[in-house]
Structures are given as structure tokens and as C-alpha cells.
Image (cartoon, rainbow, N blue to C red; front, side, top):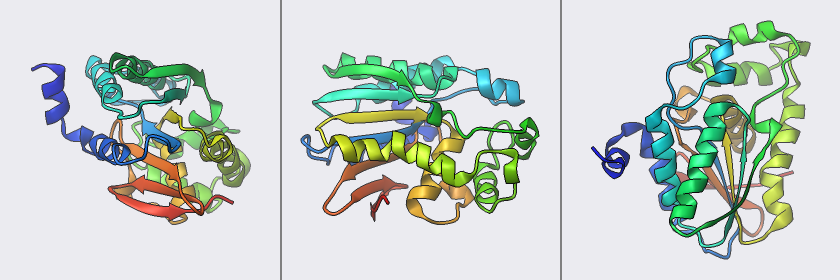
Length: 233
């Protein structure tokens, strides 16, 4: 089975395809940002693997296929976590975008896309290495369950918004900003932007994510198959 057939048959790519369909409806002169979970990886067994695990070969190939299908004519700037599976996803997306004639300005590392600062490492015992309880973890963090053992949620919220959505508002150029991140940062973004408690169905599969473009006033987010107005304070 070739890569195009794989792209068309892998169930975990459903959300990625939804986002791509939405991107194709956005005016090319509109600035656009995407927040994307990294591509396919093996199951993570412990914290060390969380910080060092890379992509499978399938994950790399499907990231390339995603890049080929991003229907944008202007320049792309990619930001990513330094963790191998995110950086490998970013590199493959860039290669795919260039393959279809796009221009990638750069791939830059962004600490906020790695996740929050952890003060006491034992906090990680509350999060399954493979992320199965990530939505519950974020909800508890927002509620203050982890106290001073990790960065306050409000501080991480400010860092993440400044590095992502607020960049879109401040630049307002017809560029595409792609941010490659992890389960945890993705769920934090949803909690912040949707302004509600997370549920298990909010978790994104590999290469799934959300898109944001500017509107008047504020912005529009595309998430879980629907468009919603959002405001950034």
C-alpha cells in the first residue's frame, strides 16, 4: 500500500482531514494558524520515553502527506517542541509543503509547545505516560490540585497564548503559522480557548488539532468539526 492509500485508510487521520478541509475554505489573504498534535508514535511506557520518543516510519510519511495537502499559497512558519516526535513531524510537514510548491520560512523551537514547567517531578505520576488521562490531568491542574509542584495554569496560559494565537493577532499577515505540539499542550489550548472543562472526547488523535483565523471582531476557531467564535483577552 502506497502512502496516498495509507493516508486515505488510516482511521486516526480523520481529524487531520477535517482541519485540512476547513483550511481549504479560508481566503488565501487571511492569516491562519494551526495547532497540530505530533504524528504516529509507538506507545509510551514511562516519563523518559515521553521526553525522547520519536515517530514511527508511518508517522513520518503521514506528516509529509499532511504537508502536501495544506492548501495555502503564501509563506509558512513552523514552530515546534524540541522533543523528537514533534520536530520530526515539523520537518516532514515542511518537506511536504515544499513538495507542492509552498515556501517554509523556518522551523523554530518554542518551549511553550513542550508543555508547562514542572517543579517537582513526582507530578508526572499523575499523568499516564501515553496520555490516556490527559484531559482529567488538565482539569485537575486548573482546579489547583497540584499546588506549587508545577507552573500555575494561568502563567502557562499566558505563555502559550503569547506564542500562538497572539502572534496571529499581532502580525496579521497572509501567512500560515503551524505549531506542532503534544497531547498536554493541545488539551491546555482547548481548555483556554473553549473556556470549559475538558472531556475525554476532546483528546486529539495523531496529527489532529485545531485551526484559527481572524474575524471581525476577534477570531474563529475550527475544532472537532465545527467553527466557533473566540475572543482573546
